[in-house]
Structures are given as C-alpha cells and as structure tokens.
Image 1: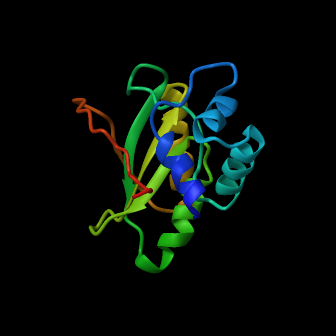
Image 2 (image 1 turned 30 degrees about the vertical axis):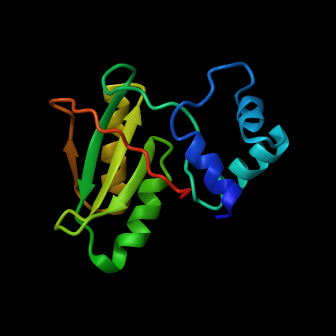
Image 3 (image 1 turned 90 degrees about the vertical axis):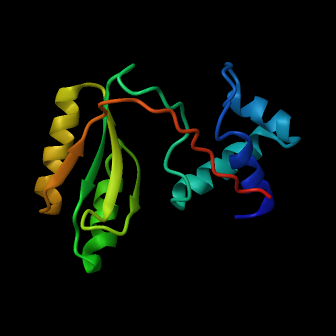
Length: 148
C-alpha cells in the first residue's frame, strides 16, 4: 500500500462520515477528490486488502453474530480460509496457533440465518465449526494504525 492508501484507511477505521456524501467528505478531509477515494477503496476491495466498508454495530443490537473457529490441517488452511471469506456474512478471519487455527466473525440478519450459514460452511468445507456466541460483552477498541 502506498502512503495515501494508508492515510485513507487510518483516517476512517473509525468515524466514517455519517452524511449523504460520505466519500466526498472523506476526500475533503484528506485534500483529494471523491473519485480518487472511490478508486482507492474499490482497488483495495478487489485486491482483498479490505473486505468491506461500513459500520460495525454492537453485538445483539441488530441481527445476530458470533465468533467461530475451525480446526484445519495446515496444508488446507488457505483453501478453507478462502471458502470462509467468500461468505458475505464473514467480516474477517485470521489464523491462530492452536488446534482451532482459523477464527472468524459471522454476522447475519437473524439467528436462523446465522445457524444456516454455519451449517453450510461445515458442509462445504467438511470441517466442524465451533460456534462461540457472545455471553458477556467487553469493549476492545480495535484500531490498527497503518500510518506512522
């Protein structure tokens, strides 16, 4: 990523403008054109650097969500991660060093759809999925600086 792409992602990990013209507002704040903001975001999505642009809601406020994990042989990890990431309900996934080595967050409009997605993932990947629904909420400010 170049410096402008890093600045764009850093500036709007939080505080995405809530207005009828959010991309224009982002561009104005960075001193660039709206067309350039859209071009950068489109390219970053197409290349897989970012998966989505949009709000993150507190759990159990709108729809349903869960943390999930799956134990995958290391030589199948990239393949299974690609399948998992292909679901629009998946926000992100990441590798961890444990028996359960692939973790991901799933969001859906309802609990029924959430269960449907998890079952389908099990069927498609061939691996059982550990569903870890939220019991007690803790706020962790997840911002990752890209621009130093």
